Image (cartoon, rainbow, N blue to C red; front, top):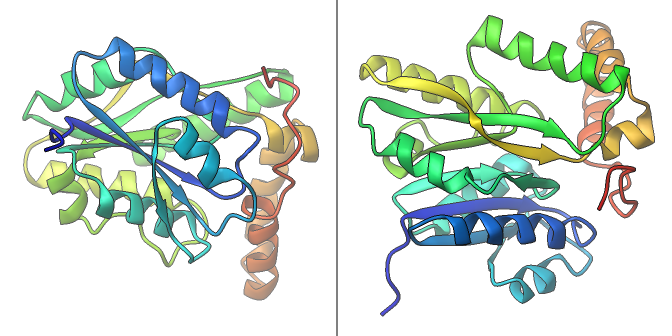
Length: 251
């Protein structure tokens, strides 16, 4: 009988054949550094490429989710997971080698409800540095959460209902805020631990420009006046960019 994993690591993936091998190689290094059991789950979110085959070839379990929604994909992975601890990161984000070590350390403390790790980029520029700083600063100052990757116990994930599938964007921020509120009610801390991190690709910046995130945020108030247009722009921004091209920081 297969032993129950200590951690289930969940990766939502839609047409990620280009980035998945690099990501899963980093996951493997983090698993090897961890003195425990980790199951890796790749959620094939309606892919039309070799995402599922590549995931299996790298030793991951593959779960299918037909609803094209990253929140639904993450929830499908969590539903299939067997670990007591759940961790989440995107398919274009590499893990630091201590990722699972720090997650397990934090979750061994019952006073901690969960949290997020640091974020780095696979290349940088003035526009990228300013954009990343501004986005992370807004998350920390206004909502006291972070982004990029998350960890929590399965019980907490289920208690808050997982990721909100009604959201087409910022579902990860909403999840983090819900997790923080849940922990506060139970006198548990939500933590932002920069000792571990993910390195995420700048592929959107390569296609849309290094200042694209700031331009997008400036347009949001106007888009709110035209909901149908906002939905179309959000789908283009978060879901319909070209994933086949490697970023300039790709290795």
